[in-house]
Image (cartoon, rainbow, N blue to C red; front, side, top):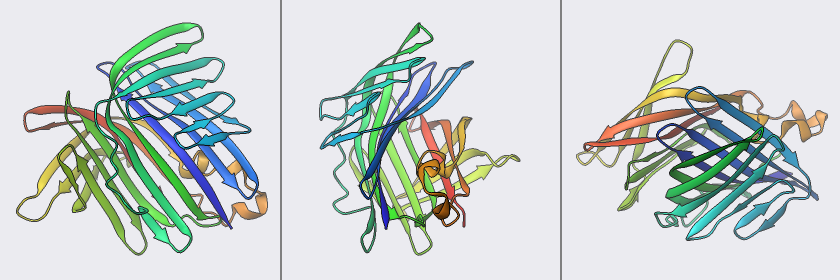
Amino acid sequence: MSIKLEKYYFDVTSETEIGFYYVIMLRWKNFSVGASGIYHFTSSTQISSFKFSINPLRTINSIQLTNAKANISKRCSELFIDHNNVVLKGTWLQASQPLDRISKPLYQDGKYSSNWKVCSALSKVDLTIIKDGNRSNIVGTGYIDFVDLNFPFTKIPFTKLYWGRLHSENYWYVFLSLETKEKSISVCYYPEGSTKNVKVNTACIEEGDIKSFQWFVGKNGEEMTFNVSTKRCLEKKPVLSRNCFLDLIPKKFRNKISSSGYDKKYEVELVHNHRLFVGIMEEVSWHE
């Protein structure tokens, strides 16, 4: 018995604002449900909105809900989310090619698998958010990826995830480190290529939040080190509050699921090769 989860993730960073957004579809047997999320931050305000939707529609390059749509194209991708009191509409104009460098599932264990595709490592974003009738226009750089999970109904196979993306004006990096009990899966993408020789360390403050990520990329002798500083923690969520729709799962199965753990996202910055990079990084931990 398994669940199939498909998720488009969009984000944006500008000089004054940062945000990330989701359109999600979940299938279990003949049942399907969708959801969308808006998480947007300025220096003094925060929007946090998540809503379910019935009758989701999936096509090759889109997920469409009654109140949201994510549409992906090689040139310009579009996102629309309407949560009544907050409406988001934006375009992500591709400034990099889709990264089709992963030719097989990121994770595979029998019939269970995880696929991850970076649809755009760097986009020019033009975004409008209307909150309680007040309109805000945001212009910045953004990122899009797609995750497709087919996993056991009562067990998530992963134990730890670190992910991040960094943008300068015309350059970018994407990092991923995913751990299971048996192995670690890592990759770093950049415009000229990619490498699977990736390690990550973190330093934490007393409350447990990360104050810096240290990524080691490449083989010995050719290794690059990225010392990434966090500016603030954007969100802290129980792992299953969004990702697995725990409230929709029958009560008799809930205690069998790895429901403890957390998902934290951070606003980050890096100075590397005399360039200033800004971005988002994430830590997810699944506990037993």
